[in-house]
Image (cartoon, rainbow, N blue to C red):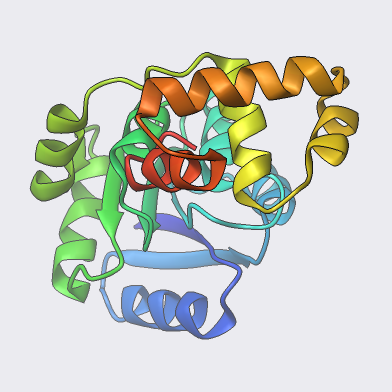
Length: 201
């Protein structure tokens, strides 16, 4: 039996995935979680063979959960199932040790096939997402520019961004200006949109 943990903050989605997987004769859903923290605790307690993780969960997100499990429970293989199939997320997930990366549009049969493949030691990345990731290239932003632009995307004013990243207002403005120039945006909101479309923030 392949023992599976399903983590997703949307109850209906999580229950549906768990229910579909439970129909497979060789699967056993041993636990469910609605946040990253719950997923890590459940995985360490239940020691599943495969953890299916949503990308955008309450802290920490699916990529950070995968990174933690790769370190603390390496025998548990992680698969990200997400509505946010952007190239930057795919690259970050693979760097964190994720063994599978799928859009939520995958069929139940397709998901089951990937779970078996990953449980057996293989890897699977959705082909369309892989092609997009190759075409998108690496982010031109530095880590600090990424942090500042991500906060700007959420609508935070410069003063708040400066406080949250422990920088001066002038330094924040410089980082935003650099990010805007690198991405070819006309302002920080457009730059944030461009970066988000590429999965860089």
